[in-house]
Image (cartoon, rainbow, N blue to C red; front, top):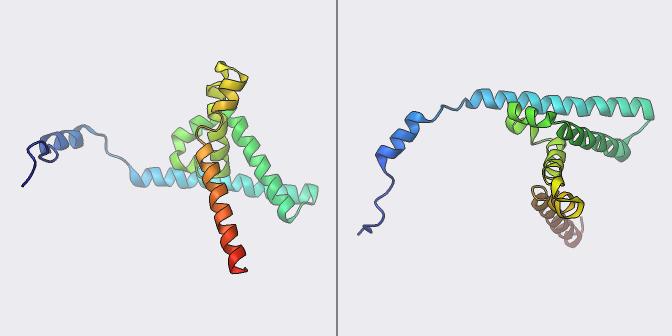
Length: 152
């Protein structure tokens, strides 16, 4: 027997919501995300080629230098307000690469800088990125322990 308090969703309301809600353009959004994410990756590849040719970097040094350059560019574009416009146009295409992570750290820092250096900028900097960092460290430690005990 069904409870009188819950009779299921109101079908008239759901029909109204469908009628007034704008239709999403899934293919268009995916295409924009793919293009912008791909362009960010192309910038990373360009930096990789240039750093290898100009500075003679290879291996982990090259990967670290490219990562630092992309993080710097992401923070710089966030500070100038450009990355937010890229994010509006690209959606998930701007979030996935390493520049999106830099944006998730720099945005709260800029937003809360008026509250002070310690209580605003430093305390709020990792509001968005903190859980990601914790998850990454814990999952990395778990995988490392698994490899250690399996002898790999």
